Amino acid sequence: MSIDFVRYTSEIIEFKNAQTLEAIDWGILDLGDINDLELKRVLVRIEEELTEELMRNYNQNSTGIFRVSYFRGIWSYREYGCRIDASSLCELKRRVIAQNRIWYVFDEFSAKRLGRLNLR
Image (cartoon, rainbow, N blue to C red):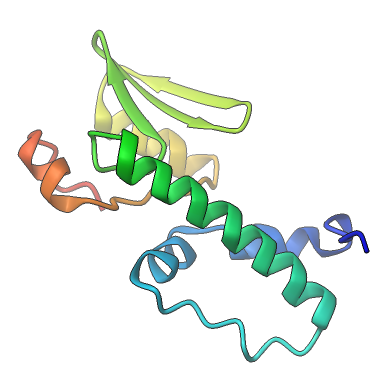
């Protein structure tokens, strides 16, 4: 049985945010109150994808910021076919948020250790 993601475009956009990612990270995301079973299937699928991506970030990302990397003076945010670059982390954060994308500090220790304060 296929899942109709298009039907729930607005719900998906609303679901994909830093608060959802934080709830996934802390293990407290609860989709139990969603009565529409097809919508629940859609959101569970997205939760699984975000969880996998978050785990990859924990294992491979030294910045401590979801989807963010730093190389040769350029900060980059990469999300499935979308790349946002900036010369400073503050500018990158501004651009990411302006495009309504997820800005999430998943490892504050790493972010602070690397001198990136006030990132939330």
